Figure (spheres, one colour):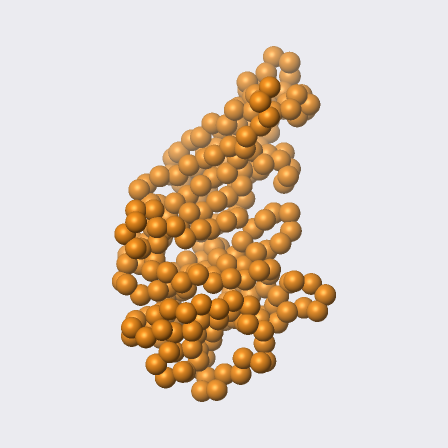
Length: 243
């Protein structure tokens, strides 16, 4: 974090802007994402969080670990329950994986504290995705000791023929995977004014475009960080044409 007495906004582009009390002094502050736009692409580099203290107009900058990508945006909301807005940052990776880079910062008393880091979330759970006989795929969260079963029987006949014999048994062992974090949404699930998070990860089959479903993980703030909200995790499946 670097305080500036006369931060010059014209040196970089303002990519996103929000107003809210983020330092807890009950005065509106000004929060920016700035960065260097490329001339021939929407890709942006050197994305930086900048906060202007609404009381004394002092500027602070917070460098981001992952500071390049597309469509950077801000959201302000209370994620910890202390009545002060926290700073939610989203950056799209681009590309076929559809990954997102997400951070949440507290700026209480003008001190940045990282509350959520997408890379930490990506290491939170260990998954296995196993194709089974009779047109089933089992998704196992080994960390939580949870199992989900996806039915593939309504998939295209050629898709199934590449994987299964006519009697429904596997031609050979086959595994899929669960992607890193694709989407993260701030949602107040219980309507108490404190935001939770809704995280989405793609379940990938034989190749990246072969999406079997989505792992949905609701998260809420605890004293030690973000953890499962109501101890629940879900798997949703992609609808197929009815035959």
